[in-house]
Amino acid sequence: METIVSRTLSVHKEHEVLLKLEAAGLCDELAQKVVDSKDNDLAKKVVRLIQNGGFEPSTSQKRAREIMGKNIFGVEEAIKHFAVNPTKQQLAYLAEVPFAESVLEACKDTHILVAVFPLSLLDIRGACKDQGLFYNQDWYNKQSFAKEKGEVGWQLIRKTPVSDSTSKTWDEQNKLLGKDDEVPSLRAVVYAMVGHYKATGERLFEKIWVRCSDLDSGGYRVNVGRFDAKGLRVGNDWDGYRHAPLGLASARKS
Image (cartoon, rainbow, N blue to C red):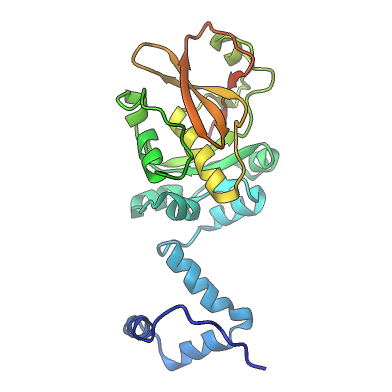
């Protein structure tokens, strides 16, 4: 029995799409391959390609996704959830994931592999306007760290604070970092927190804060956390401060 598919496009829109495809080289033979494709696989691939803005993942990216499972926020997710429009140069730079497969295997349950695009804290907040992902704060609106866009690149960010890093000063926390770890920027941590939540529904640092590498205009260390239903919070404190819910963010060096 033939499956009846509910229509979502108007006849006029379908005609426009078909004309575009024919102009791009779609012929009767190719169209029949789509029709005959098992489980509608070819059509699904075309739709997925359109959803990803024409982006096709590299072999390195595909392998990283196989290893990381849900703990990856790649180019596809950035296009979908942050509406980024990658340049050819950015895509070329991201084509090779700069972490060995052994590193990804070791980090697949504890870290998130993130394709970070040049978006500032304010850019990310603006992309999530009226979604309840940011607590209502304005103290950092004119801060340099909130405007910093950074560079495009892959980052492997820990999903939890560095082990045993709470109730310690900044210097004490840094002594706990492994030789292959570093403290990421607030921008990168927020990018990972918001992106991972939008892609999976999982909140990071929901009941705790983590220090990041940035300083505010007063010389205080910037932190982020308490990502509950009211949205994530951005705070600051002096490096000598100790507090039970305040740990240290970390990322693997690439």
